[in-house]
Amino acid sequence: MLDIKFIREHAGEVRIAITNKGINLNLDELLAADMERSAAMRAIEDLNEAKNRLNDDMKSAKTPDERKAIIEKGKEIKEKQGDLEPKFRAADLKFQELMAKVPTIPSPDTPLGKSDEDNVEVFHWGEPRKFDFTPKDHIELGTSLDILDFEKGTKVGGFRGYYVKNDGVLLVMGIMMYALNKMVEKGYRPMIPPTLVKGFALFGSGYFKGLEYDPEVDEIYQIATSDKEASGEASRDKKFLVGTAEPSLLAYYSDEVLKEEDLPIKVCGYSQCYRSEIGSYGKDVKGMYRVHEFMKVEQVTIAPADIEAMNKLQDEMTAISGEMHEELGLPYRRLQICTGDMSAGKYRAFDLEAWLPGMNRWAETGSASSFADWQSRRLNVKYIDKNGDRKYAYLLNNTALPSPRIFIAILENYQTADGKIAVPEVLQKYVGKTVIG
Image (cartoon, rainbow, N blue to C red):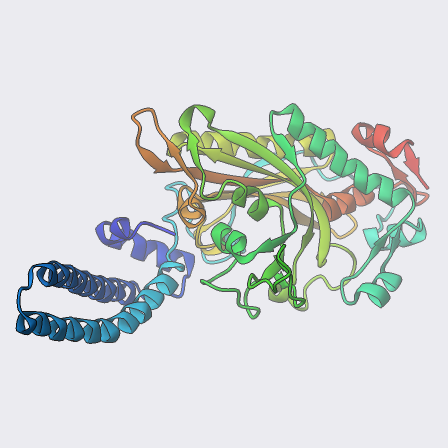
């Protein structure tokens, strides 16, 4: 969410961002709603001031007639307030709904484009392996090695359900432990955050397209069962499952006022992740490339309000993920995301993609995004700078490693002619063997 003053003063730039990001928002409607809301607020404030003056007048009134006149004026004010307050609430709601759609103006180096086809490759490491046999995909490999079971997964979990079994479990958990240890080595404080969260964490981090959860567009699972508070009363808070640790990690610092000398704050979170994948209906319906639940290690940074410093931190974060791909021996590329493929809040974004020989494609294995103060305004994350001023922090996130796609990449890149899987050297201490099969 942007500052309304900034929006008024930079309306032209905001309009361009709305167009380039493909946001369904009429900026003139927002500015008109702002004026209507402000006018209603001023009118209410004027009535409150008039009411306060009447209270003073009542104290100094000396006759019954003076007091009667004051009471009559008070009734008029109360009636006007009764008319104005619902109008203000309606105007404020419309304003907030439109404000939630306003995008961050993307970085100057963000490519212009309409879809993911316009993303630009900015870095490439390694070359796809040349096989002297026809490589299998992860579905055939996992099934034949008895480390994946999609049939039972669908029976028990439904569409996109799967079981990881036997040595596959050691490999998946090895990937997670390797990523977690790497993040700690790089100075990130580890957390296991909640995966069941209140709506404010998802709105604040931008996982709701609007003010409230919309099951038609938000790829989030809402929990139907009502919760109870410590008092035993039914909770009024709606609960949701996170699609990444990012919302939980950021919300940890919501309503906090940090100190500039403590920034940047770097944390990483290991979590189970849940995604409804409603926007990908009909895509990747087989295997575990696109699933409803998986594990991931996420990295989050809270930085001072400095664009140059934020860009440098983002480059460092993506470099860590790249380093892990290289240590795992996985050919990968880094794409800079174009305007039309960015969500509303992102200032600058990159994807990492690993090569999957069995599926014969590049596949996203992580994304890095910076938001400037778009998320921090929603979550109210501030810091006090060296001059004693309070500022909104700049927030960044990046995938360290996700379990399913890195798992796929290892199976397909490290397969042998006899259908076994060589375990990458950096994972062998976690898996306890050099070959699976």
